[in-house]
Length: 283
Image 1 (cartoon, rainbow, N blue to C red):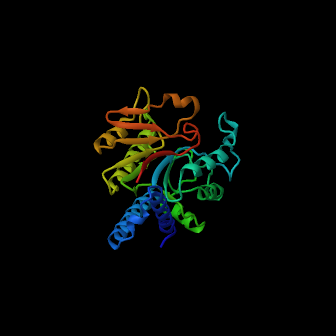
Image 2 (tube, helix red, strand yellow; image 1 turned 60 degrees about the horizontal axis):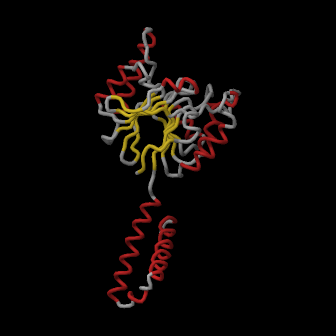
Image 3 (cartoon, rainbow, N blue to C red; image 1 turned 180 degrees about the vertical axis):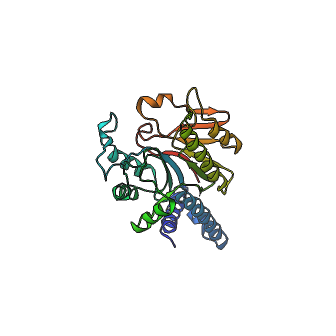
């Protein structure tokens, strides 16, 4: 019997006998037939409570901007004082060890893997399985094979990368990429945007469920403009939920949050969420 099952078994017997004594009907279960009936009640309680203990959740947050391995603290910005301590406390208060958490870009200020290790040590210390996608400040980001080798060599067991792929989390598929800016008029910006839309499409087409939750670093929409190449993809694949980061402080007021053309958009940057991962669904 697993630890969870053992805990549930104790809870079941406690609840059963407490209830029975409260209603003074323990004596009714003395006959063989009623003893079987009592065991059935215990079994039903066991299944209900075990399911409750095994419930998992999907959370998301963006723009953690960690800098344990480099000298670029975010504490100098208003509202970010002692933010890593606050983030760790809030994170572990809401996220359980078996939950999944998407971090939608701008994870670390590190420039390379040597500077990144301290930040990943911090992430590894937090509850849950972390799914990371690239942000515009993640200069350490590399090929998937090199990043996976870095994870293996440093024994990071709870960190994975969302990069031309998708992950199944309960009843949904987690898809996404960095995205790009709305007004991509320069030729170089256009090339990057085309590359990003291709990556988003590969991620979506890797999904194993029809319930796709899309994560981007750059917002695909604002109050008065949208990145049509990306919103067209969202419409094409029937995506209903899209989460993004990148915007902080005063810039967050330009974020579009709510429903647009049947899609729910939400800003999940770290300071916007008061350094607490946002619950998306339970499964």
